[in-house]
Length: 487
Image (tube, rainbow, N blue to C red; front, side, top):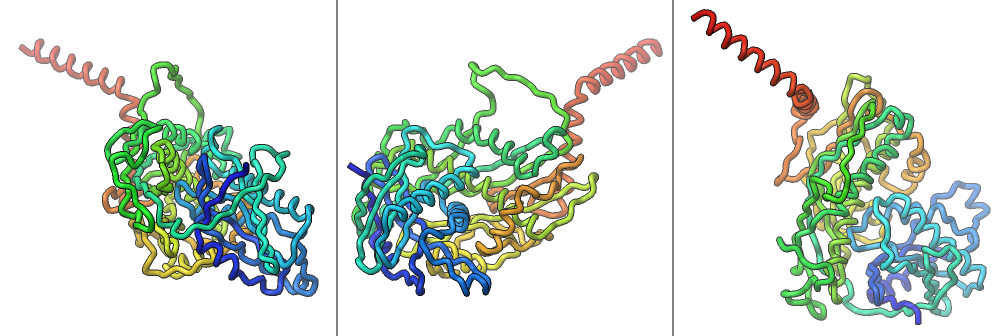
């Protein structure tokens, strides 16, 4: 028996209302959450049409075989940034004017594997063996209204299609639990002389991978308590029923990371010559969602972990794209660079308790964020619904304009291997992360250049503590001797 997909009823209306605009097909993404028994689909979004030049308009490539995988995977990468913890791109859908044969199914199969492979490259975490590895392909014929739902095992490149059930359910989007967490980060990434020739984004990702292990091995307190992994998340609480709003079922999560290694791990010190370093500092707002159908503590903790890792990695990637797009010149070796990572903005899905997110630089307007949501997710939102989770320091200067649509991003993404090597030549690059009023870190411009200097002074004092102590003892001995002989 195949998997069962429980789908929000409004998705059926959305798919049936999609206008093919004279084309033979339209494709898009399915977004939701996996569980051991069934999967939940709460959102569908079409892939925005690609801008074509006049020559392509004269000779349109409108056959399904010419489905642009690269364009679809780029859309999936950008949408995945907008998903909080617990939500994934579960698969793809395509709507055609006619029923298609086996060759068409092969096209869908290649697409779902390409989408998953592209998103997996940027993750700081890996799927566990217990997790569901099936991804769905949905084909709808607009003329006959026939639905064909199949799944493929993404861990098996040779897997064949398996049938699946596609069932609509009213009010699915209201039965979700939210978990919120604030994590204070201070990540120091040294740039060794052997890796200085690598793009800065690669060096940063390698450094984040080491930090990710701390997040994975941390202790997570849910509402101030440590709970067993297999324990029911709703134990001791009333479970929302029917169309009851699940927004009241919100959990506060706190992360305790280990300062020391376990006793069974041998601690070793590595000395390496570095040409510079990257520091990421600030307070990160994390948010995750889990369906209220028998949720387990381990699933909730896993969703929070992955959201923390995703949001930090995504912000760094967006900053690198911004630096490349705006061609910010490198500074001299003696100068230090400060860049503000984009801040997180949440927006609710219409008719749902689940909120999606986007990232905003200080000089970007709310209208730009709204337009980006509309383009990427094909859903109308109101500006007043935007929730800026983190305080934005509007006094920061030099924040370039980010590519706000998929067409601009395609250009910048293809050039990422040639990212500017700022902060790699005997200097430091401090990437100030998002701040909030509860934990203001480096909020003022006039204080930022002072902190690296103060930090370096403290480090030098610590390194020479032995010499300082010996000097103090010598001075004390001379003083005592001088006092003795004077008497």
